[in-house]
Amino acid sequence: MAKILQVADMHKCIGCYSCMLACARVVKKSLSPSRAALQVRTAGGFQSRFIAEICRGCIDAPCAAACNCGALTPREGGGVHFRPTKCIGCQDCVKACIVDVIQFDDCKKKPLICIQCGTCVRFCPHNVLEMEERKYDASGN
Image 1 (cartoon, one colour):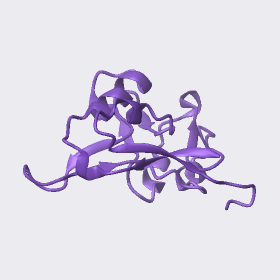
Image 2: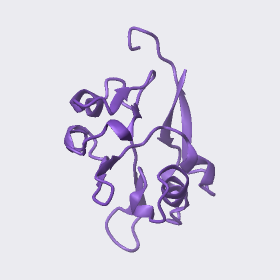
Image 3: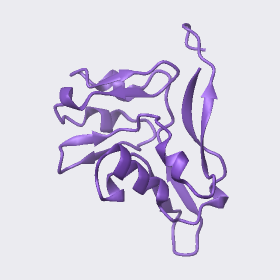
């Protein structure tokens, strides 16, 4: 079974951005939370609730299907494997994402891809995010 990032309870989010900072620092090796593969934003104003823009771990990931250079390949159980050295920076994966969560790092000329590692979950102090086991068999079910 594969584990996929999920929002457990967004109402607990206080907007501390620990999840974003953890992803940026630990996974993406950046000091900027804007370079995280997930983004937490307000839903539309200072006093509104927060929303988390996260990869949904698609079984037949359109981003991988759009990647002609082999940098993105489907991950068993959903989501993708990312091989940055193969990426040519074409942004086809960004355009193909059906939930519009893949951002492009203009400095590195690479997409910011969630690899379903769970680092963001471990650093969230309010248990907003979780890694959920997804049952999967060879037929895609």
